[in-house]
Length: 459
Image (cartoon, rainbow, N blue to C red):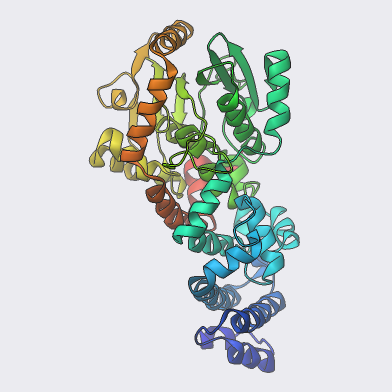
């Protein structure tokens, strides 16, 4: 590390001051807040003296990486020692529920240098993924330590399971009109069921920064609607030249936008802790988590209608559903190896459906499952003709509604508590936060997107 930094011509006095400021251990919270903050500030100043990432030569890139490694190691030590104090400072002693995308910004204000500021994030947002400095990796360190701490992590999970602020107004619109159109998500009542219809037609119903907030609002509204007992998730017809007019359940993360740098790291955590988790565990109340013995959240039975395909993140969604219907011509994939990222909570949930071997083949070896196959039916409950989805949805809704939603939800909750207690999910997400941050900013991800997706030539 010393040779790499000394070789690029940084002012010797500033390098010496930076090295002298690096904390060798941890002390009390107040003292460490000052000592570590000073070291992070000097680290940023040294990096600012070097060229921006696209203009760096090999020696400058090596020196920058060495400074980042030292600063990140110190941030991790600080959080390991003081995670509860940091979280309490930001949340007012655990009295305020703060969502992860807001928590990282407030932590940046309260602890300068710990995570990137809003201004730093805005600067990074204008760059392609390969040109980004990767300052959001520090958000992964922060989130991993918070989620890894039982009290802090549980409180954060609780915050993310509460309804989004805008969900109340959307629910009022649904109550008044029976439908609410949020753009990427449309919600309609159909008898005892509420349909959540997703659309991103230009990108084959993929997920990106334009869909994340409205998707969670849609899940909130579908879950909280008092006039229905069952929720159905379905993709809208797309406009793509090759598949125009065809319903597609979803194509996972928008790889074009990912390559362009338009999907921030916090998106992954906002997604897994937000709408995907709500499909699985329900919407929380402020006074109780969904699986607390002292109370329950609000949840519905969920039906997924798979038409065309469920790729990546959309295959992950199926693992949270109570019933999966699929057309015979549809398929499922989790192309994590070709993308170079972790497929959400699929690594946690998929082996419960397919067993460990098939799960590894899907995640690590690009295996594709035809829905109309013995392996596909491990995930899909019913496979129907291509033109039979409407009837299958109506038939399944009628069956579930006639059986009574209360007992079904009680059984759903009991199955969930046995299979994936909240504490297991929390600990998984702690690992996921750290590892996904490294994946998101890796050279391997950029290379995979270019080689396997042709991202550089896509418009």
